[in-house]
Amino acid sequence: MSAQLLDGKAASAAIRREVLSRAQCLSPAPSLCAVLVGDDPASALYVRNKERACAESGIRSVFRRLPSSTTQAELLELVRELNADPDVDGILVQSPLPRGLNETELVNAISPWKDVDCFHPENVGLLVAGTPRFLPCTPAGVQRLLVLNSIETAGKHVVVVGRSNIVGKPMANIMLQKASGANATVTVCHTGTRDMGYYTRQADILIVAAGRPNVITGDMVKAGAVVVDVGMNEVEDASAPRGKRFVGDVDFGAASEVASWITPVPGGVGPMTVAILMENTLRAAELRDMRR
Ligand code: GUN
Image 1 (cartoon, protein in one colour):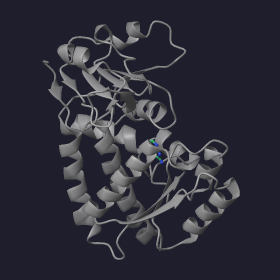
Image 2 (cartoon, helix red, strand yellow):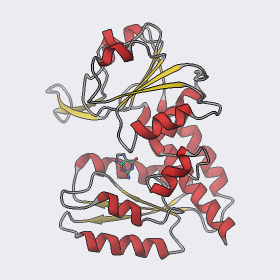
Image 3 (cartoon, protein in one colour):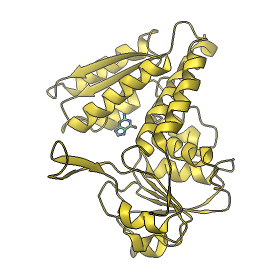
């Protein structure tokens, strides 16, 4: 392996310490309510991580765990209740929701002032306009990881693989802003792209959020590129403690032979997502005080 590791754990711990010191200046302390519907094991793990991060960041956390039989009407009612609750600063509904529930309708029902995921169309619009209220957690976490490791983005070719509303689209938007930590030339590849390697081999910075293991093989990475792997896929592994382990979207072994920097999975982007969520919750609480 020749690439250096982009350590998301260390960077996220530093961000959480900063959030803690600012949260301690606010009374009442910032608060986050996460809604988890059903029993998807990966979602339960994410929510546990968020709960732990809140405790370390001086943020009060309330977690609503609901059965997968919960109806759309019941969820909408809960969101309205949380919108009106002055004791709740940030609301997030953990995705994916069980089949049959309409995620878009729920996200649109969350107050844009409490939308710490930055999924509400008003907040997406503000981001695209270059005047963000909140930053989308995973893309902003990726950008911060680059900045904290002094990786230049201005004038670089950033290739994003994936066009989801959660990662790909906002990632591309952030990197093309005329701002520090951005100002890049951006290409977005997706399932409709022909000959993906043609594009990825031109990337100075390759950001992969495809949601499938080994989408990026070693020969698809330019020598010296920075590789950021957003993927989190559970795969069978008889030698792992639970018979399963998490891998990203990139063939880590092969890519780390050619890249200059690479994120590990886990321990790369995942902790950064949670750290930005803490920053957004702090911001929601600061905005609450300014709006009074
Ligand atoms: N599921 C995967 N990532 C996220 C995220 O950032 N926020 C929410 N609410 N759900 C997710």
